[in-house]
Image (tube, rainbow, N blue to C red; front, top):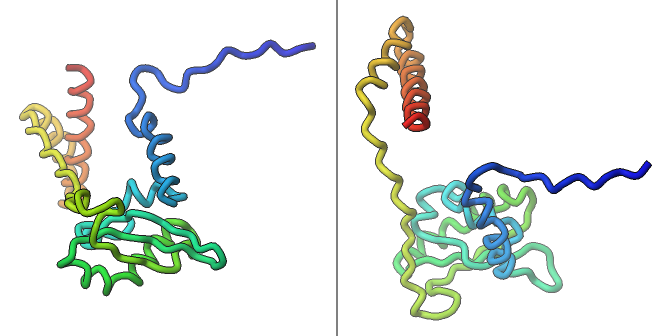
Amino acid sequence: MTRQPSPPSRRMRGFEQTAGLLKERIRTAGESRGFAVTRLLTHWHEIVGEEIAAMARPVKVGYARDGFGATLTVLTTGARAPLVEMQKQQICEKVNACYGYAAISRVAITQTAPTGFAEGQVAFAPAPKPAPAPLDPEVRRQATAVSESIRDDGLRTALEALAQNVLSQSAKRKG
């Protein structure tokens, strides 16, 4: 018996997530700069923390020809370079935790963009988070009704927030 080839299956219906569309391009761009794990680029704020991420960003990972461990180059502004210098060990530890092994052995700091001074004027602030949409009074009333019988204040507040999220999401889908 020969098997009939199955028709190609569709992964998703409707629109694909932006991350899925850009995943290959981000990986290609990251690999050209030595980043084997693109998570280091896309989740820099989560990996090193907001304080360090506000001062520096990863630029390149360089691998030595005859040694173990790579060099992570981070970009910062001139005034913040001494602060980043003092935190090189913490950056190295946090990045290695992301990789899962001691991939980075050294952190180098640069105060200009890798291609020249013109690109050195980089914004280090993350994109602002959008303000939450105003909550519909009817949704708020329904959420309060769901949690009013709970005696524990913390649990009641958490349940009310969950109910507001669920009710507002279902209202968005309907409207």
